[in-house]
Amino acid sequence: MARPPKHPVDVKLKIVLSVLRGESTQAEAARRHGVSETSIGKWKEQFLLAGRQGLQHGDRAGKPTGSEARLIEEVDDLTRALGEAHVELRALKRGGPHGLGFR
Image 1 (tube, rainbow, N blue to C red):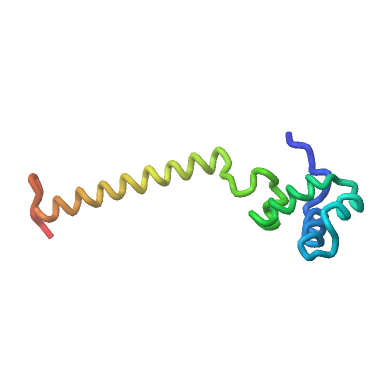
Image 2 (image 1 turned 180 degrees about the vertical axis):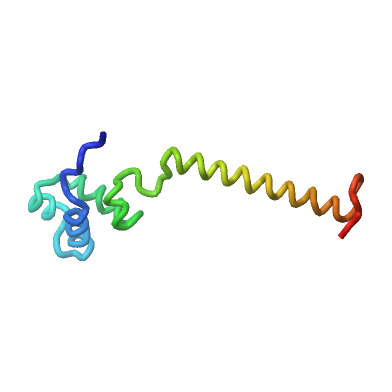
């Protein structure tokens, strides 16, 4: 089980927005909130790449989970199979080599 984040998403968001607005530097925000500048830099990057959800999911933001990756692969396979079936059906309708020649 993953450990709970030390800082809630709302706090991270507030810190990142403060830095992006120029209200404070990363160093100032780090000292004020007791975190490293590196953490704030990572949060900022995650936010810029994936918004609030990026802060919530950290390094996993934007990357499909194992089950999502399997579903994406399955959709690709089914799409390919549908395309092949469509081509075969058109050939049959047009009276291809062994086609029925109906329209």
